[in-house]
Structure formats: structure tokens, C-alpha cells
Image (spheres, rainbow, N blue to C red):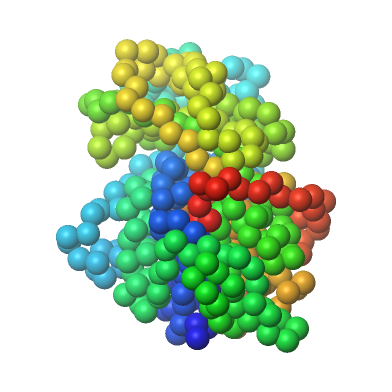
Length: 402
């Protein structure tokens, strides 16, 4: 018998399992597909404070930012030099306004973040071009965020999974959750495609598929898929040194509109490719390519870096982010069904927020004292009660993974 069953072997589920095991829990991690191959494998690896306004999510992001260096060091020590590098890089972010109309809102947003402790530095055009020499000089304002970082998301997920295994966590791939297993008036485990699994607690960390899983427990949460697309160039000499994006990115992340939201987000990888995003749209689990979305992304990116007009795109990819109407992760116990817990709803911030989510969830579940106030993230908060409609079922090829 496991003390805890975690549903979803993406980076959030892996971080939760690892943190729980570190506190002595017996943990089994289950995933319908292959661990780490769904949403966690289709992101950019961002660890950001620059895109979050004052409030609980920014508090969680700042907490996560302090954890990542130690997590990277711990993983390197545990897994040894033969394990691939996580490519953790605190390279900083640069947010720009391309119009005068967008300049003052950007400056005001940065000022509000500084009041919350974020290192948000307004920079002149000359300073901006020193940071990014290939950036278009047609800018109205810019803010430098030295705390922003990046990690290789696939390697980071695999490393957390490997570390969890070293701590005694059992990972069961190809194990689909069918429904709950009752134990009196509380949850006592899972019925799965691999049989019955008993546990004292079940954590739903299934990313954009969490709404589907929650409905199987009779405890729906309004977590829905929000699709995003990214272009990837061929390798080139490094000409983009920070994560650079326009001020519309924050508006896109906070939008409740199901229609397409596009903004310019450009950054290099350690391999020499350039990632060009981003888009957000609610189209269910539709995996079909939309050329018009890629065109909108490319056009916006060219306003920032004109040299990209000569770049060769070698591929594009898409992923589904776990969208929640009030734009806050769902972390904590569900009062409707004792024994049921959630760690989901991070949308595009799951990579960066994973370590903090794992620590917060583990402290709550094991009776500890969290370093961060968990109440804004609780499953029963009012912001979730406004959208209790049925969750669209995932297609057959969708994996239940975070």
C-alpha cells in the first residue's frame, strides 16, 4: 500500500512525488502515457517573475526562483556527471513596449512589481541595445528582469523523476485512472487499467487533463486545455541573450478570451536554436497545425528582432497548458472528497513553479507548516466556483500527464 498516489508524471507530479518521498511518504506515480512526454516536453523551460503581477502567483514564483538553484545542485549531486545538464541559466528577461501607448502600462506594471520585491529595472534605449544588440531600436520602453531564468524542460522533468525514484518512488507508466476507490466516507485509492491501487491520499497533477480526471472522482475543477504553438529555428550563433518579449505577453496570459492571443516571445537555447512564441487559444485538445497562428507569432517576433527574417525554421510544436479561469494554480486538499488533493492549473508556468508547488503540496499533505500562505490556491476558492461546467473529454491519444 502506498501512502500517496500521484496522477501525472510530468514535472509538477514529479516534483510533488519527490518532495513527499523526502518527507517519508511511500509514493506511487501513475501516468496514462510515458512519463514526462506531454505538457512538460512541449514548453520553453521558463522560470519567470517578470510576467506575474503582484499577488499569490508572484509570491509562488519568487519562492520557486529561490528554490531552483538548490534543486539543480541537488539533482547534479544525486544523479552524477553522466546525467545530462539541466542547462539552468539565470540569463534574465527583457520586456519591451513597441509603442508609446504600451510604454506607460509597462512602466506602471514594473513599478507594482518592485513594490512586491521584484528586481524590475527600467532601462534606456541605449542600455536596452547593450543588453540585446540585435533588438530593433524602434522601442518606446524596456524593463530588465535579472531574476528570470531558463531550464531545459525535458531534462529537468527526467531529473526530478530520476531523483524521485532514488527516494523510493514507484513510477507506473501506461496506467490509466478509471475512477476512485472508496474507503468509507473518504478516498482510499484508485481503480486503474492495471488494477486497484490503495493509498491514504491521491494527488491529481495531470496538467491540462486534470479536469478530465477530477470529473471521474465526482469533484470537478475548471482546468481546461489552452493550446500554445512555438517555432524553432535552426542553430545559429547566439544573437538573443535574454528572454525577450513584448508587453502584450502579460495581457495574453491573463486573458479569459478563448480566441487566439498572440505575443512576441523570443529566446535562445544552449543548443543554439531560437524559440519563437507565443500563442494561446482554447480549442480543446485539437492538435491540428494552424498556419495562421504561426504566421501571427512570426510577424510579432520580427518587430523585435528583424534579423529573424533570414532565419530558417526547422520545426514547430504545440502543447496544452492547464488553464484555470482565475489564473492561479490549484494546490491543496478538496473538501468534497477527503483524501483527494490537487497540484495543477499552472498554465504556462508549470516548469518554473514545479519545485515550489511540490514543497507546498508536501508540507500541507504531511501536516507541516508551508513557507507560503496556501489559501489563495485552495481547490474550494471562490474563483473556481464561477466555472463549474463540464470539462471536455480528452481524445484517445491524449496523455494524462502534467
